[in-house]
Image 1 (cartoon, rainbow, N blue to C red):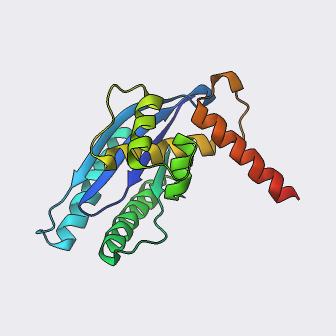
Image 2 (image 1 turned 30 degrees about the vertical axis):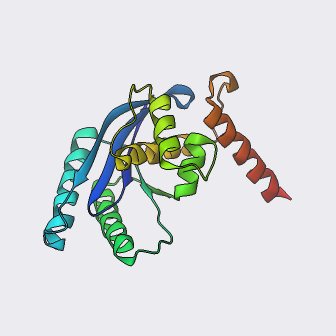
Length: 189
């Protein structure tokens, strides 16, 4: 059985959206990836509306089983934080409308899931996304690659309790599994 995950890297100027399919042993494959762009010269309501309409079209065509959004918990640029929050709100509303479960992941969770390090830079994340999905090139711009990383993070985290063959894990998956086991062990103490 496969599951589809829509990953969203929310932003008002560039909103990355990527859909992956998750199969046995957490094997992931690319379904689609795009970046929805709006102009800073346009009215706020038009920008938010356009992004919402594009994401709704994607939900209808890709039919994801889950939506994963990057959670931004602090940032110095208030204007950027507001745009991220506004687009996240639109995605949450669409998830409610279509009854799709939503999951929020922090940037460090996403980085750790795909690279093994919560401090990885954008280039490292993009390189691993391309490698994990078997792509010849890193999806551009970074928002597109980030949306796929968010979807992969969710796919691998949500399958954490399943029995998998350790021989089929990528180095990033092994690092993630080790970190999860350490976290679980420390909670038991």
